Image (cartoon, rainbow, N blue to C red; front, side):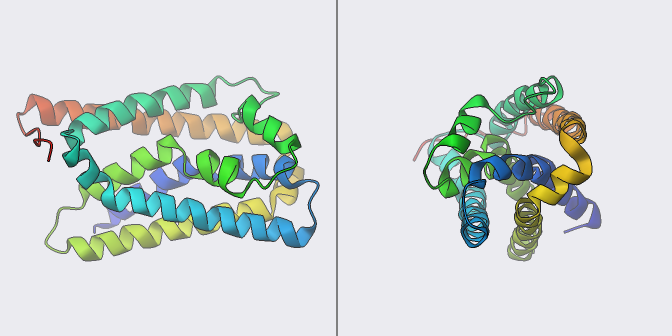
Length: 218
């Protein structure tokens, strides 16, 4: 893995998992719980999201091949999906940030938010799953196992940042305030939009150069 690819992987996953957004949603979701339970929920949701993220990244390519879908086609579809997510982040109303109304409703519900909505879709949402599959799909050197391990380690580092952000959600909110977190969300949205466009362009370039062979369904 080159340094450039490592930086790309880190920045992409950081933008997709978005620790600031996770911290903003975590506070309302666990506001009525004891500190010990809040800590447990943050840890469990991060672990569940990590298992889903890495599991999908490792088997995603095989799953696509079984369905007869090429990786460039998935990149284009994923890029378009990410672009929609990015538009929502950039043009979201200041009072609501990018957290959906349904997730805010769950913040008031008396149930464990570990799996839903924290692990899915706040941490390992469609954007993160799309990104991890394309990142693993870029690993094509003779040391592919080593690259897979390095990608997984980078993902673990980003997930650790998400966990720390959720644990320090109150402090982050005090430092940045609602307006500051909204501004950060919009800047991240611009980065996500750029990543989305890049995915679409790469998929189109592979198709235009005739490098795509549609795998037959198994």
